[in-house]
Structure formats: C-alpha cells, structure tokens
Image (tube, rainbow, N blue to C red; front, side, top):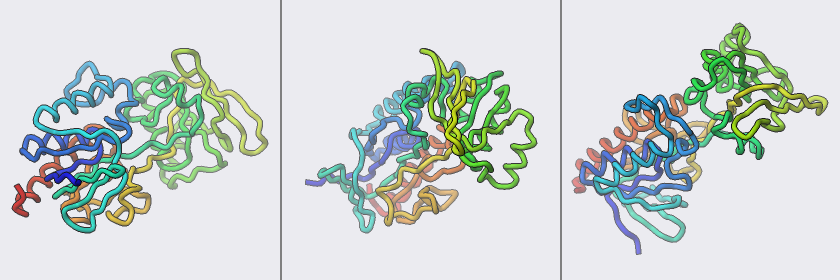
Length: 311
C-alpha cells in the first residue's frame, strides 16, 4: 500500500538536507530518500575549508551528519537507499523504491552529479590523499607542489588554470595531441607559464606511498611506451555527470542531462517538481551554492503547496 506525503525529497547532499531543514520548519514533514551515497559527494571529501561558519574547516562526512541531524530535529524522516522509478505525469506524483511506493503532492529533486573518474584501482586508493575531482575544493592543499590534471576540454583547462594559483607546476594530461577546449581557454592555458602538457598520454597508474601521491605512470596513446611523471596531486578534469537517469522523458534537461529550471526559481518543467543542487547546476558545483538552492526549492515548494490549498 502506498504512503502519501505532502513533500518528498530525492537526494541527501547539501541541497537535499537544506531543503529538508526548511521544509520541516515549515511543518511539511518531508520524507527524504538518501540515495546510495548519503551525504553525496562531500562524503568522499576530507577537509572542507570553504563552507561558511567553520573557520577551522570541517570534514565532509561530519558536515553532512550535522546537516542531517539539523533537518531531523524539525521532523524530517529518512529512507535509506535510492529511488528506482518515478512517475511525474500526474498528481499526486509517484516515487518508487523497488516495490515500495510513496505518493507526493510535491517533489524536490536533489540527486546531485557524480564526477567522472578514470576507473583504475590506484585512483580509488589515493582518493582524498592527492587524487581529487574538485580543484576549487582542494587546490589550496597543493601549495608549491607539482600536480596533473586529466582531460582536454574546458573543464580540464579551467581546473588547471585555477590550480596555478597554488601549485608550482600543472601538467595537463590529454589522450590526444590537441585540446578540445574552446579557443579562448586554449590560449589562456598556453600563455600560462605554470601550465605544461603531456600530449597523447593516459594515466595508467597513480603512484604513491602509504600517505600520499608521489607520481603517475603515463602511457603513450601512440606507441604504448610508459613514463613516470612525479606529481603530488592528480585532478580529474573529465567532467561531471548529473544523476538524472530516472527522470529521462519526465523532466526537461539540457543536452548533457542537467535538469532545466525556470531561473531564478527552482521550478522544473513539471508543475510541483523542483530541482536543487548539482543536478541542475553545471556551473558552480559547490556545497554552499547547493545548500542555497535547497533553501530556495523548499520555499518554492511550500508556496506552491499553499497556492494549491494543500496543508
């Protein structure tokens, strides 16, 4: 038998938890599905030093635990695991977790985005010990050392340019012999004396000791030869993928799958469904901006429910 909710929130990063906090304080008693990775991308981030209010910094998982507890204090209920199917074609909306159905008057989608990784075991081993997918989050920790960025598009060049503020040298590792990035970005990279290039190369293995990354083994895409590049950090610049597969055909998206919202609101293409955080933000992708849109989505949902006379 289906349980009915006024508001269901799908996703549990800074956006989902902040939406839950505001919705719970508005007496909407939201039900939040936490997904496979409760707390989202921040749970694989060690030190978070750029979230306002924590002058000494805070560990990513601890910050998420605090946000979760704060929303719970005001009446948010949590369901472990991920939503497997939705039907937004009519109201009340239907949200399934395997065979368990919840219906909802309004839904906030906060499923986030996932960084694209290389998919090699050594990368997983050194994640948080020198391997990162967020230069703006972690660049500060690489002052005066050599780092590498994987990728050849705008994302990689942006990450590399940002990292030159801290790093001694940044090597862009690209599988081809020319960048895919826009002309402006390419010129910026070539003009920067701190940026070097490892052309026609892929990362075969991340090297390191028990504590940190010490280098990467590069393999030539031309002749298969290998060499070691000594670096203390490796950044993924191969983009992010929004977690929107279950919403395909139901919510309007851009060409790479990010949900479209009617800015400056969080309204999606379906009346009563709202989006917050990285799932609709290919640009900023920060915990604080995600939390901000989570707040907006909860206020939008609360006002929308009031307009519909649903209390």
